[in-house]
Length: 321
Image (cartoon, rainbow, N blue to C red; front, side, top):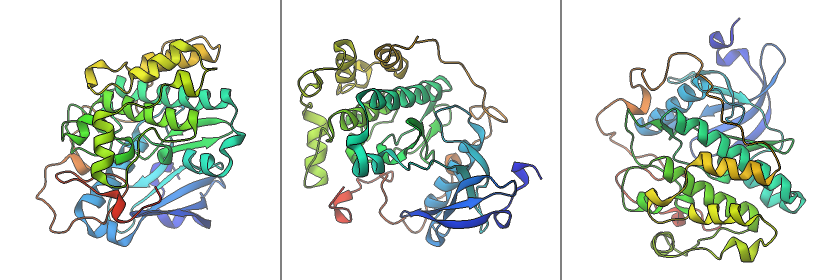
């Protein structure tokens, strides 16, 4: 049986790994005996048009895109009652979990390695004309000191267009303005993630959505040269440049990747252009959440990503985030 022919009953559930607002993830075993992270949409996700489209988009893109620092998808069904996504299993969990549980155990070099892996993944995506839209520690998966970017539900190809999405703590200023996201928006989110990983604290906070928005629009974090004096100065300057309020003033992901690799003493070779598995997604017929459809009658429950057309307030449900 080929991976593409697998269905949900072909997997044996072992134990729960986590549950979010739209899906639950379990450790499972595929027919070959390989352990995978099996992601299943919750019933209300399938019942709400936009949430179901987002899950389908994640399945479609995860199975098509291949890169060492993107979470690999093994099999999946995008829509319907048998929808699922079988993913590579990362025993260390998400970067968010690593930071909260044993962040002090991460060496300075280990933190830079994780950031270099993320910059490599974004360089690959942006080279294909894709935008992730939701770069944050909760969507970064770690194993053996290396990292992979996952959760492609909000990702899109610029040639197809997409609804604006993001997570308020990590969103670029232009997203708060309701403007279209871009590779530069991902770079800003990577800078927020880098600051949190390197200093142990988010650069911006607030007691309400409005306070958080003002912080992103008007403030700059304490310079990394003060908080992390041991970092190479060219690298800290580049990360600080990625906090620019104007998207056009931020460095590309490839430049960040190069600086991070140099700081690790590794040769910054050009990112190899790996082809997607299957048809070129940028040329494929728009499917899933990119297909124009009538607006749903109901809206999905509050989630980590901000729905299009209105400002999402994360403080209504998650005061501790």
